[in-house]
Image 1 (cartoon, one colour):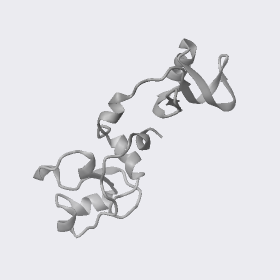
Image 2 (cartoon, helix red, strand yellow; image 1 turned 60 degrees about the horizontal axis):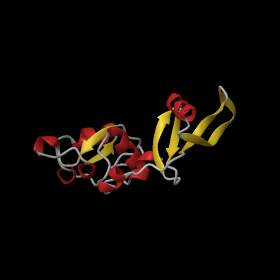
Image 3 (cartoon, rainbow, N blue to C red; image 1 turned 180 degrees about the vertical axis):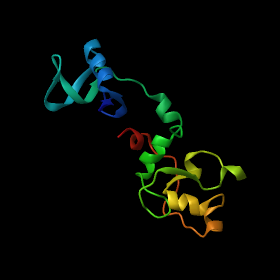
Image 4 (cartoon, rainbow, N blue to C red; image 1 turned 90 degrees about the vertical axis):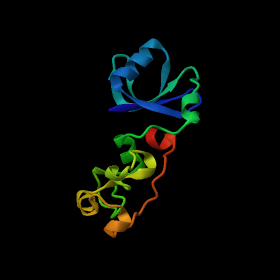
Length: 145
């Protein structure tokens, strides 16, 4: 189970595991904003959401977009194939890597196995396939939520 950590200004920062959340409570750097009803860890309620006691400046968040990760790509695309909207589990490079395509937000989408196999080492136009989504760099709050 993951616990959402909010800044002192109530904006989402990241998620942590329960052990880390309890350590934050013990150190006094966070307070419980929302807890699981009727469950406790020691004398603390089992947290769902924590809020930091002091504001943490997040300059790193506003300077540039988030780094590309498979997990982030799944969050951005909602676990759906960019070609047929089926449940997806593979990463597809729109411009194939063999042709110099980069692994970044604008060149990758999730794809189901059949669509990824059909597209192979071609561009969507060459494979006669149409993208249902426009690849883009996601906002930070899309990846935290």
